[in-house]
Length: 259
Image (cartoon, rainbow, N blue to C red; front, side, top):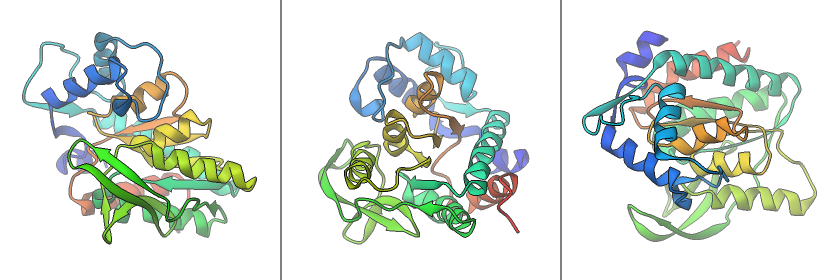
């Protein structure tokens, strides 16, 4: 699996540009809400963020490394995958309530989240789907104000518009989903499996949260440091979807959810 992660650029020498990483590190440390992913992270300096990301994700620790590609340590990816598998396996054994959501549906929905959702449902977990159809005016930096709607595919939430799923960093959809659950006085998630702001909002609400994060997404790693994200798996979150299938099998196998 380590060789596979490196060969497919999920980890190792990844395509995420170093200057992009540093820009996001600086913005998170400055407390810009968009780069907090819905988390209250307290005080961070830029230098602390560089050190934290080197330690948890395996990015370059050199603050003078400004350009070129960056790295994700595949051993850190494997360690975090195994920790995530342990938590998912416990959810399955205890038939817990689970909520799943992704801000990278193009790459991660089909090969990663949907198989995990199916495996948990088959194990007897309740996969929660609150706020189906809720919409809001999204303002992602790359496409400006756009109306997006929460849609589920096999129990996995993502944002949709015009029949197409869209990339998002926002925390607002998960915040709404949890608010709907709280207002209904029904089931509350024992576990969230997510990324981007979906994971951040769940962790901030006190839900046990395991997530995936690229090396330009420092907020979830910082959330792990402050105790709001249980596990954060470092990986490139936008390689060819088929490359994630063996990683998903590895995750489910370690969770005891493969036949």
